[in-house]
Length: 402
Image 1: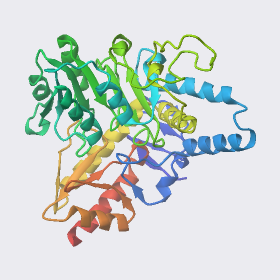
Image 2: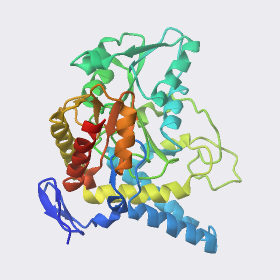
Image 3: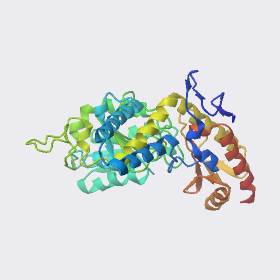
Image 4: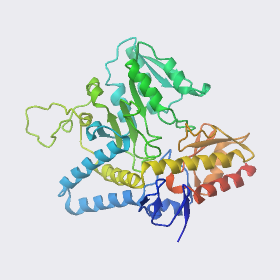
């Protein structure tokens, strides 16, 4: 039986022990990627767990044999998925959850749905991922000022963002975790300030949701979007969009379609009044295939427990940061900070070529990413212990030769 250290506990192939002492039956063979080298690229595209793969296969087989004969079951999975996502976010209700195509879809729903007026402004960190930058910059032609703040030029990024807000600020938009170096913002601090000043608060959660705990109520988040294909361990093309009930009708609907109503399958109707739920943002046919996969992956994360997942992801980042800081020939982009930890750890080869180092690591079956002049590592919870130590060994071996 293979033993792997998991957050201070040793487990067999069929059990993960949580930090609270509870046991969850999560077989490590849920992750066949463990047999295929070293995967440290969940911040890009995650490999699916076996549960998601099997859910997709079973869905496809059923469809090929009987078509939509059991469509009612598909709808049941969709309802359960909304509840699971609401639980993952600590949302007040599953009615706050919409299932959209991707993170960008959610961002554009907000960016283009607000009734902006010339002279309004919004505040955002500089160097955001294009999906959380371009839709906001496009508002400039409507007279909206986009205030981009260099949050890495200060030890207090939250205060730097809040300092740029004024009486004409309509919205603060941030990524919960920065995509290049893994800097995690204190969302509760930002949310409280936004609530006190009447500013809407949007969060791109794609680099946090599934890796770290998320609480939209405690953090005062009005809108949140996150695609499934990173830390949520699901496919591309399916995303969660959260919209707080009290601000829902502040967004104009950009699309109209048959599925935006409460009872969409009643086609012979006089009134097509949009749903009061977040389902109003779903205009057309759903991605049922993506839903069954995301349903399985979110279920797996919740079975393990997000408190345990976060503890393991945190321990990964600590192990990588401690190990890398002692390796000659590299420099950490951001030292480990327990208050800002995420699943991402990035380093820069001193005087080296990041692309060359990346190529060498890839040849040794360590999958990671180059972002700017840095190597970005992003292992998930199930890789704690020996897998992460093996990643460090590979990096240590390769760097002297590059």
